[in-house]
Length: 170
Image (spheres, rainbow, N blue to C red):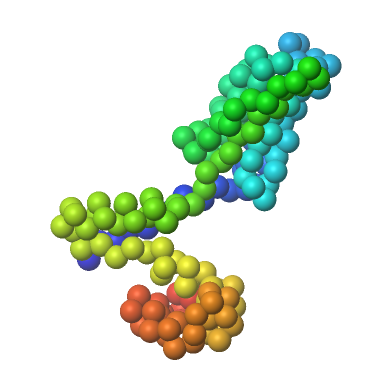
C-alpha cells in the first residue's frame, strides 16, 4: 500500500543563514547606510523582527528577506507578516515563520484524505514514536515517559505501526 508523510518543518540553521545574508545586504545597500535597520532572529519563537527608521523601509526589508529565505529552501508561503509598530524613533515588524501542522489543519487533511476513499494512515503519530525511540536509543521505558504514555500503550502503537527495532535505532 503506498504511503506518504506530511511534514512542515523549518531548518533553523538555514533560517539563521538567510537572516545573516539579509543583514549583510542591508549593510551594503546605500539607502540603508547608517539607518540602524536590522533583522533580529528569535529562534525559539521562529520569528524574525525587522527594525528600521520608517515603515516604508520595513516593506523594502521584507522584499530583501523573502528571496534569501527562498534560496535557502524555506517556503515564503509559511511567512505570517504581523502589523508594523511605529513610533517617532523607529518602526518594528515581526515576521512569524509558521512550522508544523496544527491539530485543526491535521484533522482537515485526514478528513480530506478519508473522503477521497483512499486507505490512508496518518503518519504523524508514527513519526513521533520513531523519533522518541531514536532519542532514547530504543529504550521503550524512557520513550514512553518522553511521550507521556504508558509502556503498554507504546508497545501497542509500535505493533500497530509495525515499527521495527532497526528503524527505531538508527
